[in-house]
Figure 1 (cartoon, one colour):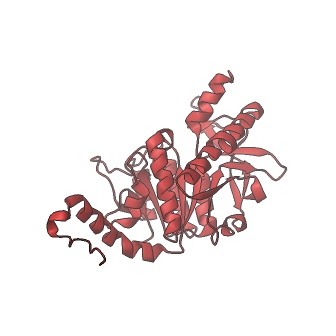
Figure 2 (cartoon, helix red, strand yellow):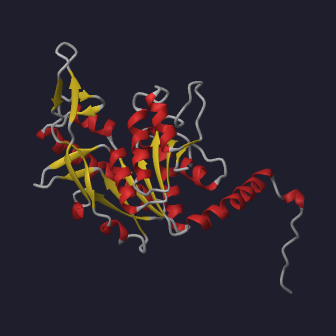
Figure 3 (tube, helix red, strand yellow):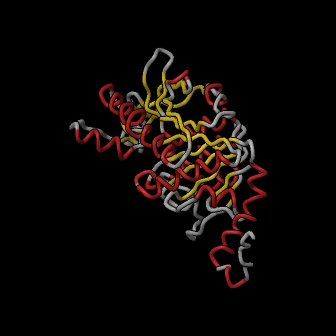
Length: 307
């Protein structure tokens, strides 16, 4: 006679299991909605420097792939670049938050971004059961860039001067074909934001800007910028859950959005205006923050979306 397992009663079901079941039931409609969609995730900041958060991020990206979403990861690496420059005793300076990148520095930037950082993210994804492939913006002319030009007004003469940031670039074109080939494959592309110029120059491209350009070229359903803040805050310091591009611009104009948040918001607005369904600024220090944003009703950051 075959043993029959005992009937489970309510006493066997603890609060943790009930919470997991509730979370799953809430997530299922969103999983169906986004099946086949493309998500571009800019990965950087504290989330990338913390070992446990990095492992959880890798698990979350693999889960997205498993439920039928096509994740594309674009990563930064400013702190790691800074440490390598210090080790090699190469002086580095910043202008308006951008690292001045001469020929010697750009070689080191490429080595760190396309080498150690990119491959560590690929390895983390594969360590938790996924498949990933590391790319540079140079591969297949994925990210063509031009020299970034900035000006600054001289306070004495009131004349605008052109700032030479060296090999700092901005995207001029994205070739989506190389990324589209991964949509029907098990591989998750991980992109280092190194661009190539029309004459083969190497350019250091801001990771937020690169992710926004990639998302726009792929007409992604979502762009996620993982940062070290909760999102856009109002004048009272409270999180703003949703903004239209017009509202975002108004908050920049009146000074509510300021400092380093301005380029992030501008990246999100540009992505939405280039066909991305929505762009989200998230606190990467929160475990599973991307899953919380897409699989629960209230979200976890600031969503910028057209009215």
